[in-house]
Amino acid sequence: MSVSRAHGAWWGSFIGDALAMPAHWYYSRTLIPRDYDILDTFKPPLPHHPDSILWRSHYTSTGPKDNILHDQARFWGKKDIHYHQFLQAGENTLNVKLAAVLAESLVACQGYDRNDFARRYIAFMLTPSSHRDTYIEEAHRGFFENYAKGVPVEKCGIDDRHIGGLSMVVPLVVWYLRDNTKMEEAVVTHVSLTHKNREVLDAALAFARLLQSLILGEKLAPAMASLGTAAHPAFGLPYARWAAEEDEAHVVGSRFCSACYIKDAFPASLFLATKYENEIRKALVTNTRLGGDNCHRGVLIGALTGARSGGEGLPPDWVTGLYDYPHLAALLADFPR
Image (cartoon, rainbow, N blue to C red):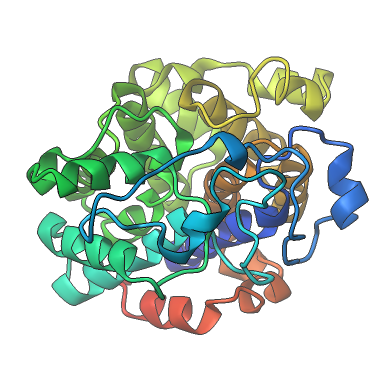
């Protein structure tokens, strides 16, 4: 049964991101149904984004060792550009594509090898045809700015405090499911390659431990209680009471900002996973319509509720509808069972 739950976590993480992708970083929530109706199926993004702030985002390459925007550079600094304008229905955003790169490294090395992943990561980011995403997060920009200056790879990460730092944790948990020590070492080593922020590292480790517990058969509330606030302060919040008494839009919007900062995005993800623990479809559709950084929240919510549902509990059309389904299925087939 743990194999099914591991598969549920794997697929749920990719689905949560891809489902939310068209409405990623919408903060005017009423515009999501206007532009996409109910996002309960995979859809491509519209070419324009009403809440885009790409117009004030800037990145300048100094040479071949930090040229990560490639032909997307012409869209930076312009208004109304969708962050993921060229992605297809069911396609994952850049951070989650990198989770697949990590999985490739795990399979090739039969375990986590930071140097091997770093080599693949650098090659992926510096190869123009590797992905079609327009937006590249601050952590990657900071990494390559340092890399171009000759900073050692293990020191290129920056003090980034966004939930995107947790987007590659799931493959490590699934790979090292029954080896706590190696799992925790791999999570900390891997996340700190790009994110050297203490809050992000703490949340990554807490999320990994929680997901491991769910895959091994625990329910969400008992698992958080067992891990306790020593593992993470967010594990002690009254999610069940909020779920019963408050609207999701109030919890994710007023209690917690819907943006990407880890201090709010992590507990917001735990809240939605708690409220819809046994209803992955409702969990991910609700997360999508709440906007903000729904893609990276979706990774966590999809993994947690996917672990609870198991692979057989996932909507089949969501699994096979993923743009990279054949590649992701082949990778998962090579993971330990």
